[in-house]
Length: 196
Image 1 (tube, rainbow, N blue to C red):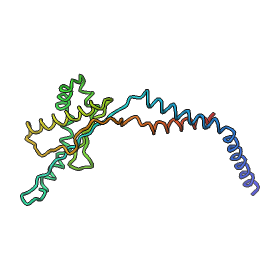
Image 2 (spheres, helix red, strand yellow):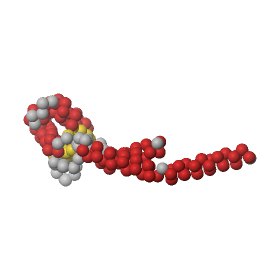
Image 3 (cartoon, rainbow, N blue to C red):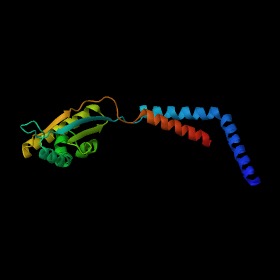
Image 4 (spheres, helix red, strand yellow):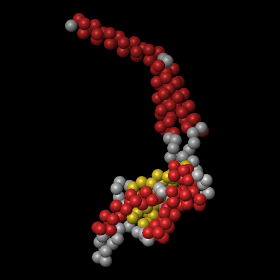
């Protein structure tokens, strides 16, 4: 019993000593935390490359019967074709034409900037480009969708696709996140000050 009391006393002494130490160094802790946040904000604002995104949304329109009902066979067919369309859009044929028409020397640049995904197993495809120029992002998405539609109509006679959301020039960067980086900087400053 005496050993337990002794342990509790030691813990109380350690916590009170820690609180006194923190109180004594509060200025240093605050300065380091604020300094870390300011440095992270400045680095994010002035030294990190901003990235801009543009997105188009393609919808595979299901066939409607004469009675005005969606044809379930066509709907199932569309669901199965979505992954094929995503793969075709990511293929060398489409991307090399996009690079040629936009005067981008490297097809890999187009490929690396694009993200083409099926939205939650629906008949919707999102085509997104992220680059360091908002106009270039929009141009890559627009050209990819245009060339894909043209290829599908000419070679496969597919006409059941429509663009539900047109790509736009988005002047608000998607990365880096000023808020997140500033918070990380302040936490780093706090940890540094506590270690000091």
